[in-house]
Picture 1 (cartoon, rainbow, N blue to C red):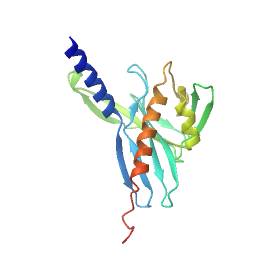
Picture 2: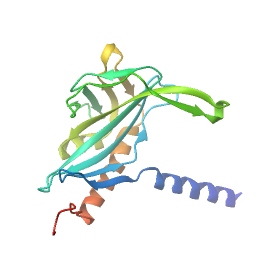
Picture 3: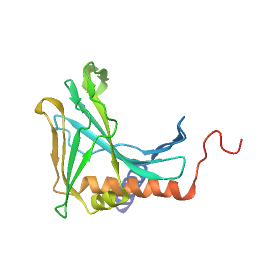
Amino acid sequence: MNKVISLLVCLLIGASAFAQKIEYDKVNNNGFRLIGTTPENIGSMTDRIKAKLSLGAMVSPEGKAEYILDVFLTTGQSISAPAGARMLIKTKDGDILTLEERQGVALEDMYGKKRMIPELQNMVVTEYSIHMMYTLTEEQVAMLLSGVIKIRIELDGGNNYEKEWKKDKVGKIISKDFALVNEVLAKNNRKSFTDDF
């Protein structure tokens, strides 16, 4: 019995250790260093709109860093959001943070992607998704680290994404991602392709 419990504890620790990781660390053509973590699911299986999020960073060629909250929304019908779509975040402390989508263009997926689900006898489903990006200051990240209890994201057609949690799932994800990103920033100052040429 003790061996079984020990094995389960090892598996759980191993699974949680590999759940979040740095997905990419690259320098784009404009000299900006982009660091991103693996997106994590923040909803439940019964949600009409599935949501994942991750925290990354964008460092300018001059060395100025800003944090980027990436949000991925997926649903079974076409989905769109207006340019500058707002996101409201309520923290455990009762603070409300209002963010504006940074890409500055309307986002939409009207065609979707087909995906086969082997577990359901190879049933084919169409998924529609959009990727939204929000800029955060270090102070705003600190606010989120205190805990997040509710999120609302502005979508077209009055079908906003909204989710409320009793336990702080979002704050924990952001906390882990924040630590991962800062660890990479502290120990590895990547240079662009043209540096020292």
